[in-house]
Image 1: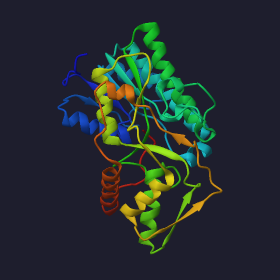
Image 2: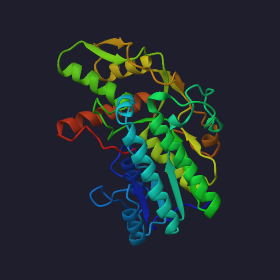
Image 3: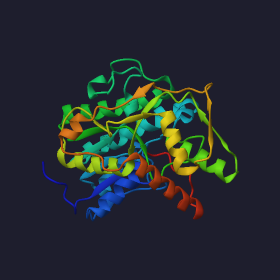
Length: 323
């Protein structure tokens, strides 16, 4: 497969989010000269008319579809309508407009939450739709599954080169650190930081700590996305991760060492753990020639340093509802 033309127009949908901003940084570093973005004030990705008009006017040749409404367990459970509506509409409008305007290639980014709650570990791509979903994020998962099937449908009916990648849990600079809507790493980082700022020696963490999770630095994901755009073209979605996991208890203890080493952890066992384990089988991705390069320890330190600098500069730590 040929490399992407570095001078062709490339659209990053969701460029202000955790993943989108990292992809933009990578494309700039790789010498891409025509990176297209559009803020929400200019383009509502849930509106087919607006999206069709934008695609017709700008004619991107490549699309990274990494926009969406995202959040942790609390956000998923309290905003189910937003999670399923926003994401299904965004996927639908962008994919259809990409087809209408003859986009050369589109990469759609899903989520590992598409897999069943009790999927065989490590999770291969074949586990999709093999069992019931995790109830705490089923609305988001259903929308993401629809996105995969949407790309497959346009590929099969119209011959579009639309591919799907399923990343594991992400973290990194630019993440959402709001305690009501963030994922586990930024939430824990914020809790330990706030406790240190208050001289409070106790940090409460949800669940029992027994659940296992895999984590990927967002810059590694951006690298994988560009690799797949240039080296992968198949109907089946492909997993993106490290192939290594750890317990939430181990994660909390690791973050404590980075942020607030003297803190004590109290586990709120009345809160849910979520899926017991979620480790991706990434052998297909590794066989294609890509591997992650950022260790969890280095990645956490990098993320916390970004947090401290952003906090000192008054940058919003709420993030945006985008991947």
